[in-house]
Image 1 (spheres, rainbow, N blue to C red):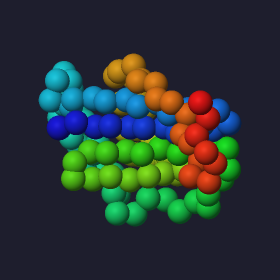
Image 2: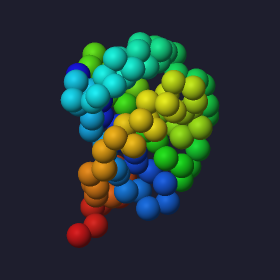
Image 3: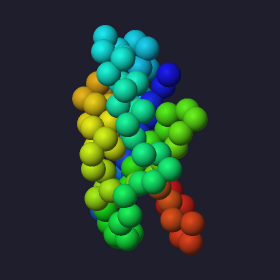
Length: 103
């Protein structure tokens, strides 16, 4: 099983992505238990906030997009574990759909 965490937004708008293959981890059973704890269908409610990070978490068949302040409890534990287990890949700045791309 693979877990992907992408963080975008913030003032610079840069995207970082972490990827962990759980089956390659020495404590994979703990990973699976943590993933089962997550309330995938009910992330904590928080109003959108400009210039804050947004996290996209994918773990088939689950996917969720959360604001930075929504990362509490098992959500925070999973993101922290993924970030501790691997280095991020850096993506470019996300372009605004109303603004032409900068080149």
